[in-house]
Amino acid sequence: MTASSTRRTTVTRSRTAAVGAIAVAGALLLAGCGDQTSGGGDDSSETASANSAPLFSKLPKEIQDAGVIKVGTNAEYAPMESVENGKIVGVDPDIAAALGKQLGVDFKFTSGSFDGLITAVNSGRYNIAMSSITDNKQRQEGLDDSGKKLGEGVDFVDYFVAGTAIYVKKGNPEGVNGIEDLCGKTAAVQRGTTYEEALKDQSKKCTDGGKKAITIESFENDTEAQTRVKSGGAVAGINDYPVALDLSRKADNGNAFEVVGEQYDAGPFGIVLSKKNTELRDALKEAVDAIIADGSYQKVLEKWGAESGAIDKAAINGGK
Image 1 (cartoon, helix red, strand yellow):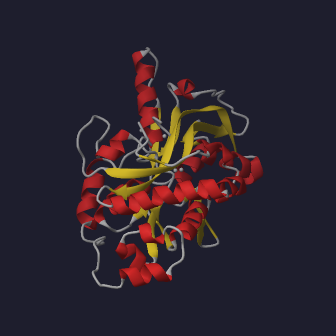
Image 2 (cartoon, one colour):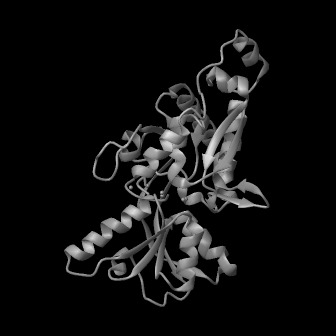
Image 3 (tube, one colour):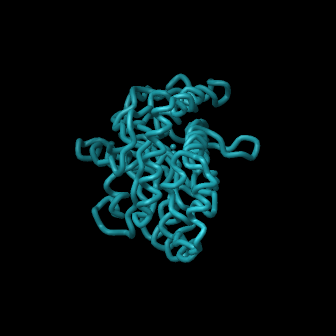
């Protein structure tokens, strides 16, 4: 669900860092839900030799032993991640499958709320999160929008780039051509995303310029935001460019929405990891570079019509 801002928010399918008291409370609830420490044992060399995947030996022993990387996501952002016939599909799951071939393990996706993913990774519930999460300094350092410390920061392995886009009802009845046209109007967005923060920033620009503020309606999930735009309750929705583009192509066979203007504030999406999990982080970076080199990365993007987000090389904490 960002350089500066993209879905799922600058956390400012870009989406904003795990936020506020909800995130802090979530951390308390989830503490102890998982344990990423090694389980011990003397069979690591035997396990490694039995797995012929090129990068298996780079993984932490507990991941080698488990044979699985647990992934948190919010599967509401086609084509990046969504649910079809009870299965999570999209760009992120397919990239994960390609990474799995390099690493010799499976990636198991579980869908949950977007604004709880970073907390869940730091608690150990998931090994990683892949959910079109914008890499930015706030999330890296665990800060809120004012610079106040909220909790633990996270590391990112950047694997994709996308900007923010505005979508409206088909025909654009309100004549919206850019985010600056939303002054005095109502816009819908998913809560906890970088897009929500982008709307707040623009609303301040509106009032500073003598115009009316934007009425921002934030929803628990993106489907509710889309419904609000479709019903006319909001004149526009804000989302990642590839997500908004896919929505305009497929919703009601292309008759529900359209994207207005060009994408802006393009920035990297990253795989989220605990800062304590540097061994897995570095293995994932190598794996991303490997699938770029062997062409499987490009094939995934072409399959989902997401070629505009391709990168040439993985990066660690490349967001600003």
